[in-house]
Image 1 (cartoon, rainbow, N blue to C red):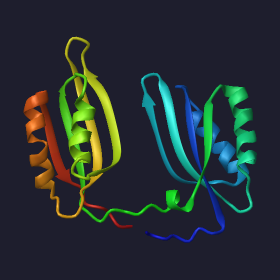
Image 2 (cartoon, helix red, strand yellow):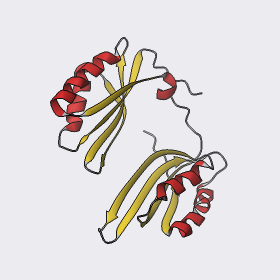
Image 3 (cartoon, one colour):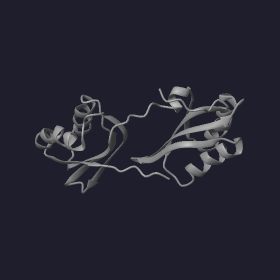
Length: 188
Protein backbone atom coordinates (compact mmCIF):
# COMPACT_ATOMS: atom_id res chain seq x y z
CA UNK A 1 0.00 0.00 0.00
CA UNK A 2 1.18 3.51 -0.81
CA UNK A 3 1.58 5.63 2.31
CA UNK A 4 1.32 9.39 2.20
CA UNK A 5 2.04 11.51 5.23
CA UNK A 6 -0.97 13.66 5.99
CA UNK A 7 -1.08 13.02 9.73
CA UNK A 8 -1.83 16.64 10.54
CA UNK A 9 -4.87 16.85 8.23
CA UNK A 10 -8.46 15.66 8.26
CA UNK A 11 -10.15 14.97 4.93
CA UNK A 12 -13.75 15.05 3.77
CA UNK A 13 -15.60 14.16 0.58
CA UNK A 14 -18.18 16.83 -0.20
CA UNK A 15 -20.88 16.07 -2.78
CA UNK A 16 -23.13 18.87 -4.04
CA UNK A 17 -26.03 18.74 -6.48
CA UNK A 18 -28.22 21.64 -7.56
CA UNK A 19 -30.25 22.95 -10.44
CA UNK A 20 -27.67 24.70 -12.56
CA UNK A 21 -27.16 28.43 -12.06
CA UNK A 22 -24.21 30.80 -12.12
CA UNK A 23 -22.27 31.02 -8.84
CA UNK A 24 -22.50 27.49 -7.43
CA UNK A 25 -18.73 26.91 -7.50
CA UNK A 26 -18.13 30.39 -6.05
CA UNK A 27 -20.63 29.81 -3.22
CA UNK A 28 -19.13 26.44 -2.28
CA UNK A 29 -15.51 27.55 -2.55
CA UNK A 30 -16.30 30.66 -0.47
CA UNK A 31 -17.51 28.49 2.43
CA UNK A 32 -14.40 26.33 2.18
CA UNK A 33 -12.11 29.38 1.99
CA UNK A 34 -13.72 31.04 5.02
CA UNK A 35 -13.21 27.84 7.03
CA UNK A 36 -9.58 27.50 5.93
CA UNK A 37 -10.18 24.30 3.97
CA UNK A 38 -8.04 23.28 1.01
CA UNK A 39 -9.61 21.72 -2.11
CA UNK A 40 -7.25 18.82 -2.89
CA UNK A 41 -9.24 17.15 -5.65
CA UNK A 42 -12.46 17.98 -7.46
CA UNK A 43 -14.75 17.11 -10.31
CA UNK A 44 -17.62 19.33 -11.40
CA UNK A 45 -19.99 18.84 -14.32
CA UNK A 46 -23.40 19.50 -15.80
CA UNK A 47 -25.77 16.53 -15.70
CA UNK A 48 -28.90 17.41 -17.65
CA UNK A 49 -30.11 20.62 -16.01
CA UNK A 50 -28.30 19.93 -12.74
CA UNK A 51 -24.78 20.82 -11.67
CA UNK A 52 -22.82 18.26 -9.66
CA UNK A 53 -19.61 18.67 -7.67
CA UNK A 54 -17.48 16.14 -5.84
CA UNK A 55 -14.66 17.60 -3.77
CA UNK A 56 -11.97 16.19 -1.51
CA UNK A 57 -11.15 18.88 1.03
CA UNK A 58 -8.66 18.99 3.88
CA UNK A 59 -8.14 21.06 7.01
CA UNK A 60 -5.51 21.08 9.73
CA UNK A 61 -6.40 18.98 12.78
CA UNK A 62 -8.36 19.46 14.92
CA UNK A 63 -11.35 20.27 12.72
CA UNK A 64 -14.78 18.71 13.10
CA UNK A 65 -17.06 17.51 10.33
CA UNK A 66 -19.87 19.24 12.28
CA UNK A 67 -18.27 22.65 11.66
CA UNK A 68 -18.23 21.99 7.93
CA UNK A 69 -21.81 20.66 8.03
CA UNK A 70 -23.06 23.73 9.94
CA UNK A 71 -21.60 26.12 7.36
CA UNK A 72 -23.00 24.12 4.46
CA UNK A 73 -26.41 23.93 6.18
CA UNK A 74 -26.51 27.73 6.06
CA UNK A 75 -25.61 27.64 2.36
CA UNK A 76 -28.34 25.04 1.74
CA UNK A 77 -30.93 27.21 3.49
CA UNK A 78 -29.88 30.23 1.42
CA UNK A 79 -29.50 28.55 -1.98
CA UNK A 80 -31.15 25.11 -1.90
CA UNK A 81 -27.93 23.23 -2.70
CA UNK A 82 -28.11 19.56 -1.70
CA UNK A 83 -24.92 18.77 0.21
CA UNK A 84 -23.49 15.53 1.62
CA UNK A 85 -20.26 15.35 3.65
CA UNK A 86 -18.31 12.19 4.48
CA UNK A 87 -15.13 11.82 6.53
CA UNK A 88 -12.33 10.06 4.63
CA UNK A 89 -9.81 7.55 5.94
CA UNK A 90 -6.12 7.60 5.00
CA UNK A 91 -6.69 4.74 2.54
CA UNK A 92 -9.29 6.83 0.73
CA UNK A 93 -7.02 9.85 0.37
CA UNK A 94 -3.85 7.86 -0.38
CA UNK A 95 -5.04 5.18 -2.79
CA UNK A 96 -2.73 2.55 -4.21
CA UNK A 97 -1.99 3.64 -7.75
CA UNK A 98 -1.94 0.99 -10.42
CA UNK A 99 1.29 0.82 -12.35
CA UNK A 100 -0.11 0.00 -15.80
CA UNK A 101 -0.47 2.13 -18.88
CA UNK A 102 -2.95 5.01 -18.87
CA UNK A 103 -5.36 5.11 -21.80
CA UNK A 104 -8.38 6.94 -23.19
CA UNK A 105 -11.32 4.95 -24.53
CA UNK A 106 -13.82 6.81 -26.70
CA UNK A 107 -17.11 5.43 -27.96
CA UNK A 108 -19.41 7.11 -30.53
CA UNK A 109 -22.62 5.70 -31.92
CA UNK A 110 -26.39 5.68 -32.07
CA UNK A 111 -27.95 6.13 -28.65
CA UNK A 112 -29.09 2.80 -27.18
CA UNK A 113 -29.32 1.15 -23.77
CA UNK A 114 -26.30 -0.84 -22.64
CA UNK A 115 -23.34 1.03 -24.13
CA UNK A 116 -21.85 2.04 -20.77
CA UNK A 117 -22.56 -1.35 -19.21
CA UNK A 118 -21.15 -3.44 -22.06
CA UNK A 119 -17.94 -1.39 -22.45
CA UNK A 120 -17.24 -1.08 -18.72
CA UNK A 121 -18.06 -4.77 -18.05
CA UNK A 122 -15.63 -5.88 -20.77
CA UNK A 123 -12.93 -3.71 -19.20
CA UNK A 124 -13.72 -4.72 -15.61
CA UNK A 125 -13.56 -8.40 -16.54
CA UNK A 126 -9.95 -7.80 -17.63
CA UNK A 127 -9.14 -5.86 -14.39
CA UNK A 128 -8.97 -2.47 -16.13
CA UNK A 129 -9.43 0.32 -13.56
CA UNK A 130 -11.61 3.20 -14.81
CA UNK A 131 -10.42 6.49 -13.32
CA UNK A 132 -12.74 8.93 -15.11
CA UNK A 133 -15.89 8.53 -17.21
CA UNK A 134 -18.15 11.00 -19.01
CA UNK A 135 -21.10 10.52 -21.33
CA UNK A 136 -23.00 12.99 -23.45
CA UNK A 137 -25.84 12.85 -25.94
CA UNK A 138 -25.05 15.00 -28.98
CA UNK A 139 -26.43 15.33 -32.48
CA UNK A 140 -30.08 16.08 -33.20
CA UNK A 141 -33.35 14.84 -31.73
CA UNK A 142 -33.90 12.87 -34.94
CA UNK A 143 -30.36 11.44 -34.97
CA UNK A 144 -28.93 11.38 -31.44
CA UNK A 145 -25.30 10.33 -31.06
CA UNK A 146 -24.07 8.85 -27.79
CA UNK A 147 -20.54 9.73 -26.70
CA UNK A 148 -18.69 7.85 -23.94
CA UNK A 149 -15.20 8.95 -22.92
CA UNK A 150 -13.27 7.18 -20.20
CA UNK A 151 -9.76 7.16 -18.81
CA UNK A 152 -8.44 3.88 -17.50
CA UNK A 153 -5.34 2.26 -16.10
CA UNK A 154 -4.52 -1.01 -17.79
CA UNK A 155 -3.26 -3.82 -15.57
CA UNK A 156 0.30 -5.05 -15.99
CA UNK A 157 0.60 -7.16 -19.11
CA UNK A 158 -2.36 -5.58 -20.95
CA UNK A 159 -1.35 -3.18 -23.71
CA UNK A 160 -3.38 -0.46 -25.43
CA UNK A 161 -3.51 -2.73 -28.47
CA UNK A 162 -4.85 -5.59 -26.30
CA UNK A 163 -7.54 -3.31 -24.86
CA UNK A 164 -8.52 -2.20 -28.36
CA UNK A 165 -8.76 -5.80 -29.56
CA UNK A 166 -10.80 -6.66 -26.46
CA UNK A 167 -13.43 -4.12 -27.54
CA UNK A 168 -13.50 -5.06 -31.25
CA UNK A 169 -16.43 -7.46 -30.91
CA UNK A 170 -18.44 -4.79 -29.06
CA UNK A 171 -17.94 -2.37 -31.94
CA UNK A 172 -19.79 -4.77 -34.21
CA UNK A 173 -22.43 -5.85 -31.69
CA UNK A 174 -23.34 -2.31 -30.65
CA UNK A 175 -22.65 -0.75 -34.07
CA UNK A 176 -20.46 1.97 -32.53
CA UNK A 177 -16.98 3.37 -33.09
CA UNK A 178 -14.53 2.55 -30.28
CA UNK A 179 -10.98 3.79 -30.06
CA UNK A 180 -8.34 3.21 -27.43
CA UNK A 181 -5.20 5.33 -27.24
CA UNK A 182 -2.38 5.79 -24.77
CA UNK A 183 -2.26 8.92 -22.63
CA UNK A 184 1.20 10.17 -21.82
CA UNK A 185 1.31 11.51 -18.24
CA UNK A 186 2.79 14.98 -17.86
CA UNK A 187 5.21 15.65 -15.03
CA UNK A 188 5.29 19.11 -13.51
